[in-house]
Amino acid sequence: MSLAESVASVSGAFDSIPIIDIGHASTPEERAALARQIRDACMNVGFFYISNHGIPKETVDTVLSAMKAYFSLPLETKMKLYHREGAHYRGYAPAIDSNIDSEKRGDLFEGFVIGWEELVPKENDVKKAEVNIATAPNLWPPEPAGFREAFLNYYHAALGVRNTLFRLFALALDLPETYFDDKNKSLPTMRGHHYPPQSPEGDCVVGINAHSDFECFTILWQELGIQALQVLNSEKQWIDAPPIPGTLVINIGDLLARWTNDMFRSTVHRVINRSNVSRYSIAMFAGVDPHVLIEPIPSCVSLQRPPKYEPIVAGDHVRKRLNETYHRNAGLGD
Image (cartoon, rainbow, N blue to C red; front, side):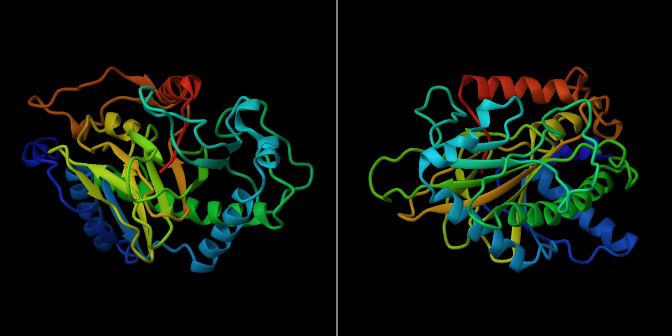
């Protein structure tokens, strides 16, 4: 059975999120076995946890402490780096500033967005002439101390996870392992989130309303002990995706779903923090270079499953989604 034909048996009526251990991928046989697990998760759920991902606990603990200290600062202090004051969405986003669903009140989280940057700036570093959302300079607050280092240490560790996953996704699609290597030189955006506490009783404002992500995939760390993320299955049931120690959550975005002719599922999800305490998370949004043409991958097309989408340039797709979201007062988060 071809890859395109195998999707006929997929239902999407999942009731849990699979966990995949990616710690053993040193041989071609191990990577092939992992790719089969990832393919099954992407086709049936669109979400999966990964364990043994390689990000040190100390790195996570340090960035969590930095987020707690930063988001506890007065609003007027944080607003000095308001992300809408620049053209490329770097810096601070206050609560209710974003609204994924224009029919709802807004998304109850505040965030801080960064992109790639050297841990130690190079001397005589020449900035790229073409500045876009992937290459725009970061904005850093003067306090708390160590904030920049904490965010960048986590960013660089998560970047290694991104690189591993792109190769496993290629194998899962019956492509050469290096298929995406020359297409993802643009480095991802990362966002730290703070969801304020709300009572578990009565009505509450949704942390982030039901949505799908729009890049290729998202790498999410979520604070332990607080259930907030929910994933929508094909039966229109919300399935909890609780934080599991030592894991990250991976979900497929619209761009990779389109690239795979919807063989990989970009699943709708939301965040509702009813815990009575603050909840923190970090999402890295992994995409590809703006010039890459997104058209259905050959292994995802058959006579029975013809292409569902017209080709589109990746940068045009991202700009369109950004305009649809930020410019109607919306943002990113999980």
